[in-house]
Image (cartoon, rainbow, N blue to C red; front, side, top):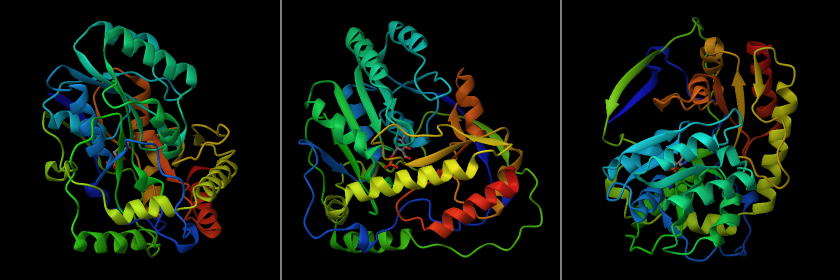
Length: 373
Ligand SMILES: Cc1ncc(COP(=O)(O)O)c(C=O)c1O
């Protein structure tokens, strides 16, 4: 049984975001010839959460022990473990979202852990020394390592060749966060399993959804009340949320999504994401009430989102009422991690994907400056 703290925005009546949070399908991002195949032994699930479920199952979560996950997470990282009936422990993170290695080591030494989830947040890889230290701890305690590259397609491509089926090292990715495709979750490191193919109607819907996803919405009418709103709700839960549909766990991702992944201009998408990240960093420099979590990127990194840390959450409603595309992990399982507790309401995830236009970036920056200057 886990205790969750969730921000309930029902009373806020936030409008739909004006700018798409995820990239849509654009012809200019595609090429006719397929790019290189992704690393061998990869399996294509419907979403990253089902790839995680297969990794956790192969690692023995539930049957053999608990999942040890980072204290800053979204629900879909934990749901697969709950679906397996597994216990979940949480380890604390530092300000830069790297694991607190001392606390992590202590939790592993306590025993009872089958798998450890290490997340590369927002497309930025954890430092090589950190990954090596975590890997060594896992080896020492006989615990499987699941690298969560849901935000980091390019990190997944680098890490996947290192894991062999059955070797206790798994890599998971969520390609629909990077490419303009409607679904997908990749898993490397697990023994292959038979996945049911999707029907032609689902394939057609997938193309339609991929196309529609990138469309901007109308600007909302100016909201009268922009005061803080919403309420925190506590619950105790042992079952997965509605975001985890067991019926999809053994289905394959769409063939259309695989085609889009193979035919996307990877370098171009990565370059545009880096450029947009740099634009964000320039736009928010000097804001009084917020600062970027990372103002620059490591070489070669293709970011997923631009993480912006608010001083406090008092202006969040005003930003949402403006129609800004903001994600926030405001539902967390309770832990003793001070950083995650603070980031739950204060860390904004802002899009920097390839589909953004210069005027959209400019408009989003102007809204942030209006509310947070
Ligand atoms: C860090 C992380 N891991 C895993 C997932 C699950 O990926 P998917 O949405 O493809 O199921 C997400 C989803 O947002 C995520 O942010």
